[in-house]
Structures are given as structure tokens and as C-alpha cells.
Length: 259
Image 1 (cartoon, rainbow, N blue to C red):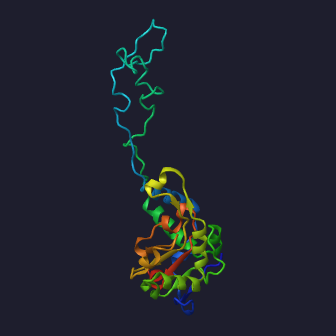
Image 2 (image 1 turned 30 degrees about the vertical axis):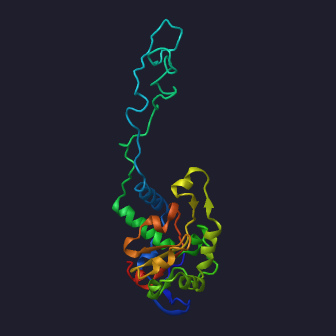
């Protein structure tokens, strides 16, 4: 892999304006093993603990009848002349019985991350955005992208209209990836529709800026497109699903903010 020493800056019309020195972070070796470890830990931070009521399936006075009745010795509901009397209860595997191994809300599901590993994963994921082969292997449409890494001047941050952003992405060669995302949106079946999570939207381009001067409003109606501040970047944004090489558009000030 050839490491670039400088990078071309483009304006929102797709015209090359100047070159700047590329930060040293882009020379970091790509470490998929560290990225997988850190992104998996970050994903665990979004999980919600779940458990079961300790008394679930045990709210009954059922007792075993013991031996001598030609019946299994599972607890049975007391009483006579009503539907549940004599029915097996409490034991796992019985109707309305307790669960055998229910999930516990006390389970530790949040994974910890070593600070140096987290930083290395972030630097590695940033470096991966400059490698066309890795970005293409992730499934992004990169045939028309002007450069890797793709850096645009700070006027990108001031775009506040979706139409203007669309025109900019077309000139930068990023729009085909938005089209790819829109044609691969899937609708899940079942009860997820009631939970507003029935649409599965693939990951599209990531816009990295220093200040949000309207760009988030302009991008929120474009499927798969996300905006992130360089000061809040993490490996999960740059390598969704633990796969490095997300198609990323950097603002000039964001690229200068890297080390």
C-alpha cells in the first residue's frame, strides 16, 4: 500500500482547489482484529438488560403428591372440581411453570475496552477510509468517487437543503452509494412493524465535520447517510458491523483536526 503524504481538497462543485498535508493517522496499519474487538464492545453498550420476575411460574400452592399414586412426582395444583386441580405446576416444562434458566437482569453485558485498544481501533478505522480496496470490499459504490480520502472544503458544513446536498454528492461521485442504499432497504415482517423497527437500512456514506451548520438537517432524509463530528468519532461509526472501510467524506477542518 502506498501511503500518501498530501491530499487534494475539493469544493462542493467537485473542483480541485488545493492540496494539504495528510495527517499521520492515515499511515496507521489497519488492524481488523482490534476493530472487531472494540466495535463489539461498543455494540454491547447499546444493549438493554433484561430479566424475569423471580416469582414467575411459582405463584401457586402446588405440592408433589409423593409416591403411590401412579403419577410423576412433579408439584401438582391442590383442590378438586376445577380445571387446574391436579395439574402439574411450578416445574420447568409444565404448563404455566417457571422457566428453567431465565435471563437475569444482573448479568454483566457491558464489555470494557482498554483505552489504548480503543484509540488504536479508531486510528485504524480512520486509515481504512483512505483505502479504495477496503471501501469497495465493504460493498460501497466507489466507481465515481473523486479521491480517497475524499476531503471537501468547509462549505460542506453549511449546506442546509437536501437538494443542494444531493447535487454536491453527485459532483463528488458519492451519490451512487445513496442509490445503492435506497434499493436495498428491506422491510421486516411480524411485530417489528409495531415497534417502528421494521425497516432495515444499509449503511451509506459518513460525513465527518467539525461544526454542524445545517448539514444534519440536509442529510436526514437521505437513506443510509450519517453525519458525525470529528470530536465524537468512534470505531463503530467508521467500521459498522466490525467491517472497516466505510465510504467517508471529510470536511477540510475535520481532516486538519486529526493527528
